[in-house]
Amino acid sequence: MTTAAAPSPIVASAEGSAALVCRDVRVAFGNTEALRGVDLQLAPGEWLGLIGPNGAGKSTLLRAIAGLVDHHGTISLSCGRRPGGTDVALVPQNPILPEGMTVAEYALLGRSPHLGWLATESRRDRRIVASVLERLDLQRFAGRPLTQLSGGETQRAVLARALAQQAPILLLDEPTSALDLGHRDTVLELIDGLRRSDGISVIAAMHDLGTAARFADRLALIDEGRIVADGAPRSVLAPGRLSTVYATPLSVHTIDGEIVVLPAPRARQEPRP
Ligand code: ADP
Image 1 (cartoon, rainbow, N blue to C red):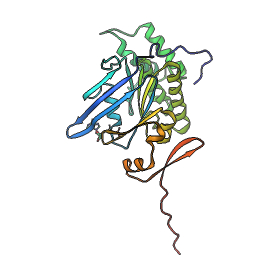
Image 2: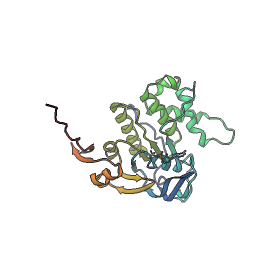
Image 3: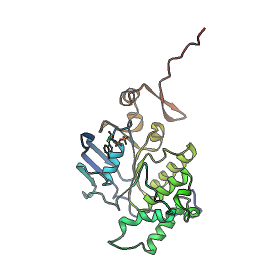
Image 4: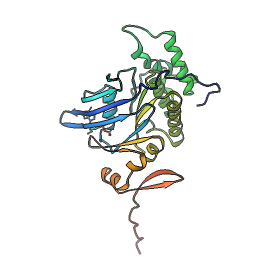
């Protein structure tokens, strides 16, 4: 994942343009109110962790920000404009991986928002993709079909497509759910590195609360379509609040300086005589 020379920034002018504001965002699917008035702010260069139980509305919020679902309320950049394909890039939870497409071809799809009507990718677009593949240590897989990659390589290819978009805001929907611990940390460290070097802002929906706390500057806890807590990880991850929202007893510990959330111990069953 490391390169010898200092890599060129993936996003050249992210600084100052990444802030995002959500005001009273509401999304309904028929009778299901997936988001019931979400207020949220993202500062430039910030990593915001979205946490909450299944069905809370995390994916819907990311999809609304990416413009993939209709919403009421306001989602805008700091300049007041609604974000478009060159502003936000989404790494979806279950991406569609086109049959027969190579890693480089798939990553090149990330350039689509930059292309004019009926335009084809230029040499510059291919150079950007090559640079992203290099940053993700994927050059040797460039010509390989997506279907012939391991889980970790696939995850990186999906990230490559999003990074090729060169958007200053990266939206990650459970980006490491299919990865083992080693691959999980490698991918998250890589994103964190890009954030620090290129000023990308990140909103990441994450299942594992300890991992979310480790990488995020701030956590937003969603429950039933509403943000019920928003702040520093240590303040949001209060055991009483988590136990209520996740509807199961949870305890919060600090091990080697890191926050760890655990289920409360089960009552011990005495062995039968
Ligand atoms: P999370 O990501 O927190 O698990 P989601 O945003 O996926 O939650 O879902 C929020 C709610 O919206 C759930 O009740 C889910 O069933 C519903 N929902 C999400 N997408 C759709 C859809 N396309 N059609 C109907 N209901 C949906």
